[in-house]
Each structure stands twice: as structure tokens, then as C-alpha cells.
Amino acid sequence: MFITRRLEFDAGHRIPDHKSQCRHLHGHRYALEITLAGEVIEQPGDSANGMLMDFSEVKALAMQHLVEAWDHAFLAYTDDRPVVDFLRTLADHKTVLLDCVPTVENLAQQAFVILDAAYRDTYGNHLRLARVRLYETPGCWAEVVRCPD
Image (cartoon, rainbow, N blue to C red; front, side):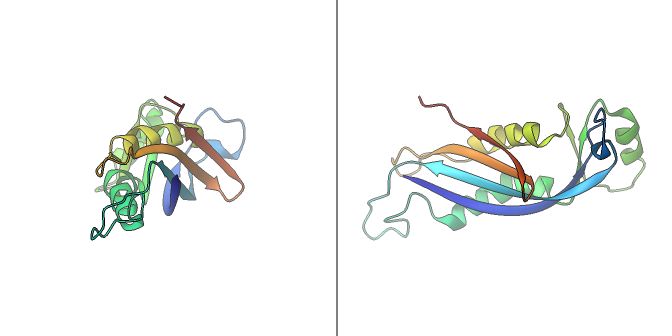
């Protein structure tokens, strides 16, 4: 069984070596889809009975571990010195420094690593993160899929 929860957040970035517009500071309305795999919980009397995981819990964990940090932040590559140095001059600016260029591909990989640790098998239903899909625009996305065990 698979379930998917979609969340949206806004963030800025730039791709410093890009040959086109993406080398400039800009932002996106990202959409994050989190797909979990596992077995349906069969625990009569439990509020999660009949579910893989309560969608509100899927959202709460994603918010806590990823979205709150990235929402309305500037996602900057640590080696992009001009941008990182500039952002440091802004008092209380929300900046997330990354050890990779913040392409949608790299951001999806980072999101998968962060969220993989957040979703655990709580009910003995073999719950695991199966896929992260990150939309940079409505028509462009990257996804990371867990390889079968």
C-alpha cells in the first residue's frame, strides 16, 4: 500500500553556473509529495486503524523536519560565495546553507535523506519512505525513489 501527502512552500535559490535565467536570484512555489509504503494498520480502537499513517501525522513530521526550515528561506550553495556573503549582511535572514547546488534534483535528494529518518515503522506495519517528488514549477520536478530491498 502507498499513500502520498502533498505540501507546498516558497523558497529562493540560484544556480550559480547556469547558462540562463536560473543563475539569478529567484524563487519558486515548491510542491513536495511524500509517498510512504507499508501495510494498513489493523488495530481496532486506535485512531490510525485502517490507515498506513494518519495524513495529519505525515504532514506534521514533514513540517517539523523539512518544510519549516526551507519555507521562505533562501537555499544557498555554501561555495556560492557572493550570495552567501551577501545573505550574511542581512540581519535575521532565513538562509539554509547546502553542500550542493540547489537544483531541484539535489533538493529532492536532500529532502529524501532528511525525511527518511522521520518516518518510522510505529505500528509494526513496515512503514517506510518510498518516494519524494519535488516540483520546482507545475511542469518540472525531480523525484527520488527508494530502491527495493
